[in-house]
Image (tube, rainbow, N blue to C red; front, side):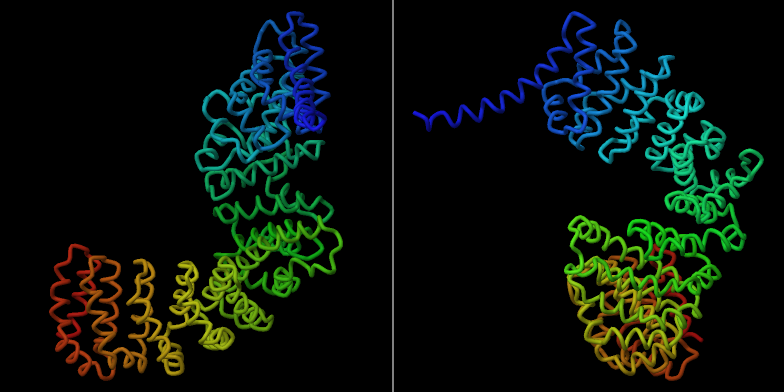
Length: 589
């Protein structure tokens, strides 16, 4: 008989756990208010740090009852406050807990609770709201459903340091779109939050700073307003500069750097302003060094890339500051070798952030190399970055292949011949053509972009086509014949148009009747983008001012291209008809 007792025994253990949890829930329904209050207090003590108990209580229906008690005007203030505290504790469990709380309409209930005049109750409601809203599973739109909520939260900012901390944290997490920025701006976020930057509480200062970073991001209206704000007689930009000093916590330095970066990118601060050149840029470069945590380096590199992306002078300064380019090469060395790490948690942390680190470095390389030849020629060529990026294009990870090619594509843009030759040499024709047949469309598109940038300006086109022309033409043929998207084919035809612009390279097209027939086919295609790119190609082949243009014009006339151009002059798309007319004029000149 003993073997039969095993199953009931297991069930009884489970029943015991559920029964204990059930006991907590049952006490919430006691007719004696004092016993209800004691029940809530006991529940609070039972759930602290106990996720299993939290889950049990949620499953057993504690949340609707707690919310009911919280909203009842007949409940004592102490009971309502304890209910808010328990709900806040339940919210600190798993994401599933948060989903359950949101499904029970916890947010409108707590927002309603903020209308109560009692400060301790308000703080308990705000603490719970903060915990719910910072979870990625909570829809932030729920903060904006009722238009009276934001102005009421603004009015509560002056009540205590806790209300300031929780409300600014809610704002910084729930400001995700330009519409959210506008709502907060229109309800006085700037004038209400600015004084908090001088709060005696570090948490309040930090959350206020985060608010300004999300408000200013890609928002000219906010950024221009921030420039003129005074905090205790000091310009806001100078407050941010102070917060970037080395003696401040790293989180504060980084966030203040973000605020000034976003204001600069939104056009509110000039890129040559001393607070950008002498303060923000050096601070962000400093954040990239290996003495910082991996996530801090990621944030620093991404913000720095964003700051200097459109500005050549900032790129030049950054490339020569604190060995930045050499520092970035370190970003690809994570995770450290497994044998050297005995701490499993540390290894797990490194693995998690390794991909983000590489992504951040790619963004920075792309920014550094996007506008200025001097930067590309010197620090980047000398640092071995091109070899590094070329090796990453051989990775098994499509994301790494895409990013490696993307960074090379940016480096090749308007680069001098030395850089282009180095890219082709390091990458090798075999790898280039392997990438052109990559199954990942993103890899293929970026490789075509790289090829297009390599084949720009006539001497470069002619030089690369003289050494690699046969393979490039073969790759172009394969892509145009295969089943590819319109975008892929358009990019390929643009490469062909660049080849047609070369002095000697264009002969590789003119002597290839099969390729000319393909161009003719795409001139008659149903997609205007492909028609345009193919017509552009023919236009380059028949251009009058170049040697041999008469012979090329005659051959293409015989092949029926003039008839097609006449048809295209009647196209409904004005760009296409204009392009066809321009090409036909070459015959009349």
